Amino acid sequence: MNDYKVVRIVGLVYKETLWTLPSVVQICMLRSGSWRDTDLVLPAEIFGPSRFNTYINGTFNWLARDFGSGMINEIMILSFHMSDEVFATIKIPDFLWEGHRVSLTLWNGSFALIRSPFKRGRIRAPSTPTYFEIWAMNQSRLEEAWVKQVAIGPIAGVERPVAILGIDKLFLESSEGELISCNLRTQEIRNHQIYGDGRRMQVGIYNESLTSVE
Image 1 (tube, rainbow, N blue to C red):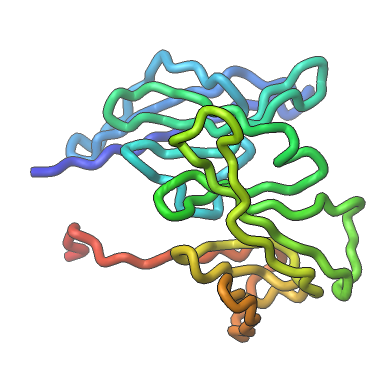
Image 2: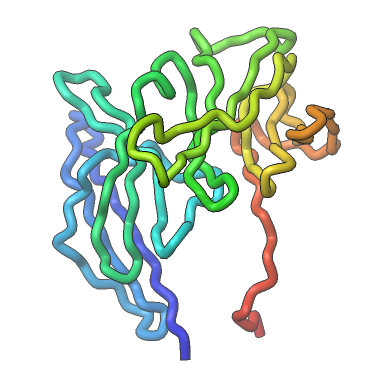
């Protein structure tokens, strides 16, 4: 009978001083239902939970960053190998993230980044157009490993990407909190009249499960 593994990464911060302690990595096998501590050390700091599906080839993956002298030195992909229970990293070239917001996703069986110009300040007029680019990692080449697959826009009234479906459709959240989608082949925009709660919108891609819910 198959078992399932859950990984929990706990970050600890002192509220009074904002000092951070090394993250704790815990693993649970669902059959046993109990958590166990590990001695694993995170090689980089995770940005936060991913909005996209990033599970590929037995690894779960996050965007992470390395700090030096209080500044971000590197952006990388942090991978956790579910079977071996080890971490690995892949450095992302500086030109892909400097001056841009980036999201990690998958594209045609490879890692991909969705990037858009970094929003200066906290407020941007809804009518301000922006663009999005999708860059995929070509694992067969050691140099120039990232290749631009598609460019979208400029589009007005769009806040951020929230999901990608195959290589055909990108879901985005509008500046008004509405779910919209863009056909990546025709760049046709569709409004779905579904609204989220202020930058908290998430979209999950449903697949039939092999596990009974009964």
